[in-house]
Length: 177
Image (cartoon, rainbow, N blue to C red; front, side):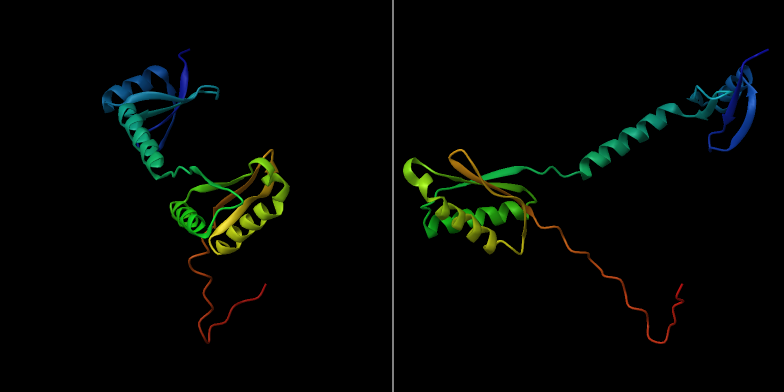
């Protein structure tokens, strides 16, 4: 008895169970490939298709998906407890630019020497930064002391829903369940 396969056609229409030789003959007549889809099924499932064209389309889909994905970088901005307003404003402007690009930011506040005894100054600086950017950021990690530096991670705030649900038109009735 010749082995049998469940066969589907080039347009994904079911042909039925046919012998393997018949399936190969049909593939040759239609000038397509006989591709095994499910080997463990009983009988195995095969499909008549142009395999080269199928692989090409899969490759195009993968390239398109890769082109649409965005890479999120982590940018680091360093402060010191005694950072003056001019430098602070420049760093704040850079942080806004990074956020606009969709990057996450690691804000590092480094203490040197005896500055470590005045952690409250560093915390105040990071809280000021957080308050000034409150409308455009999401704090992922609140200020935390790691050795001689205080670290805070921020990310761009998520976009709000573009269109809220529409209110029903005047005079229309809705059925309550």
